[in-house]
Image 1 (cartoon, rainbow, N blue to C red):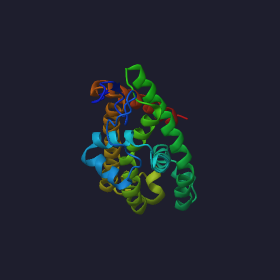
Image 2 (cartoon, helix red, strand yellow; image 1 turned 120 degrees about the vertical axis):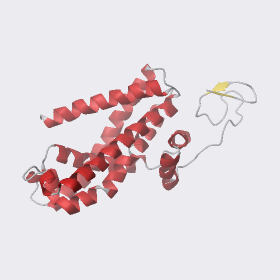
Image 3 (cartoon, helix red, strand yellow; image 1 turned 135 degrees about the vertical axis):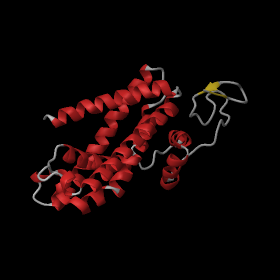
Image 4 (cartoon, rainbow, N blue to C red; image 1 turned 30 degrees about the horizontal axis):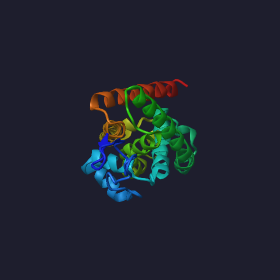
Length: 230
């Protein structure tokens, strides 16, 4: 909570003006600058998430959700080795580009709802709008992987990256392991950002934030297990 320096009234951490005397508590943020925010997520994640929560307009949430969704669709195609079902690479890539945005927007909505409800159960004060914004920006490393790693995977393996006949590990073992390692690092980075985001938006410690992150991991793992055996 922020105590007003004029009247002493306690206010929400992200309030700009005092609820009682209307004095300014902190500088307001109207819009987010994408490149400044992306840099801040690397340099000082907690400060970046605080600025995201303070922003009146949560810019780029739809765009980043859509890009994360595209990465998610390609991950599902890889996970289920669905490459042979596509007659050519163009159709495989096009499927991700078309199906990814709505899937990403829906997934962020669901994950944000889960994080918001768990945060409330653990005593958090974050609004759903703020939770959705920080959850979306926590997925930025996955977007980096889509933009920087996925084109290399396609260039080296084509549809065989999503196939087990022959497995990509047989085609080029070293490259495959390195690329998967980079994808895995992006996911771990996103989870670390999710912990920081949960700390900031809910106003509690890392212990409870880790509980929320572990719950998200468990639910995601259960969903992946279901996809694997669908």
